[in-house]
Each structure stands twice: as C-alpha cells, then as structure tokens.
Length: 243
View 1 (spheres, rainbow, N blue to C red):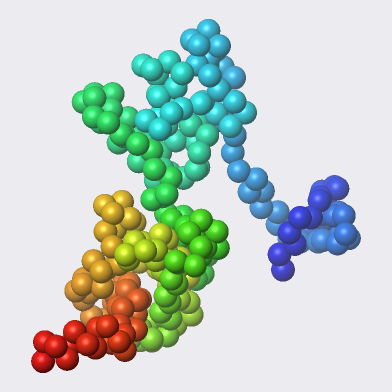
View 2 (view 1 turned 90 degrees about the vertical axis):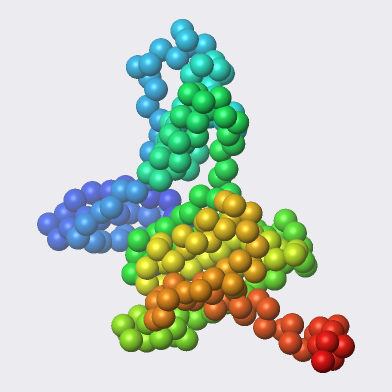
C-alpha cells in the first residue's frame, strides 16, 4: 500500500516493531523502516566562498559543460545538483575529461539518462514519458506498445508480466521509452544509444535481434510502429504502381 502526500508526525520503537504516526492515516506498524529521502550536497568544509564558486542548497552551480562559476573548476555527480545516479557521475567524468584535457565542446544531456528501479519486475525509463511528450508536442505524438507475454523467451522463463512502451514524435524521432518487466534495465540500453546518437525508430526496427531473447521486444515494438503502413492508401498506390 502506497500512501502519497502523507505527513509523518512521529516515529517510535515499540516491543512489536516500529510505529509511525501519520496525519490522516493513523498509526502504521512495521518490522523495519527504510529511510530513502535522498541526499544533499555536503560542501560545508570546502570554503567555496573564498574560491568564488557559486552554490546553492542543491550543490555547486554549473553550466551545460559542468563548469562552476570559476571556469577552471568543475563539479560532477551528486554535488552538481542534478540526477543522483552512479552512472550519471561516470557520464559527467567523461565529459569533464574531454573538455578539461582536450578542450572538446561538451553538453550535459539529462534527456538521455536512463532511470532504473530495481524492483521485481524492474522498471526502466529514458527520455520523455507519454504524458510529458503529449504536453510538449501535442497530438503529433504516437505511442506503441509490446507486451512481454508475446515474447518467447519471457514465456519460456515464466516472466511474462510487463510491457515496453515507446513514445515517438514526428518523422520517427524517439522521444522516450518506458519498460516494466524482467531485466528492463538491460533491455532499455539500445534505446539510450539510439537517443544519444539521434537515431530514428526505423533503426531499431531494422535491428537483427538474436532469438530467443528478451531484448527482441525492442525490435517488435519498433516494427509495430510501422504496422499501419500496409493499409495506408498512399502506400498501396505506390505498390500498385511498382507492380
């Protein structure tokens, strides 16, 4: 049971476990308490004021190249005030090395950062959600889905719960992908590459996926995007002309 927008008044320990007193939902009793309130940047001992480095409660203020207000000082990872993932810190490190050592232009792109929640089944997402894409691009957005239960590997392993959903914009631009299912964090990686390199949905549909693999749902959902073309009047006229 998930209680959203619930204020916690008090937390105490009893003989039977942990007691949480809430506003609106009374007392909640459990055996364990997981505190997952996130992290904040710890810059108190760095004396950033003396160095002229600007910062806020979220961390060091950086530009799109991760430079601070002092151009020779960079900030990466959690302290840069953005997404708090280990893979983001690794990504930031690569950008800073290219810029600081080789003077190559870089841009920190939050739109290509994948999110994975390691539950069972896993939940993975990159780019815009369906709601975010519709809000930004309106009726031009198309959404295509493919269920895990239509994947032979998922059937063989008894992991048929879940689906993949791809959000596609004009001319086949990939706006975002969401996956819930077994190994979602692994399956989403081709989409991260496609969005990083600006590939269109056609590239995923043309991919040859080994059989039987869970990753084949990537190709199947991409092919599903083109499934309506066979009945398109313009395309049928072209086929008749070629015949």
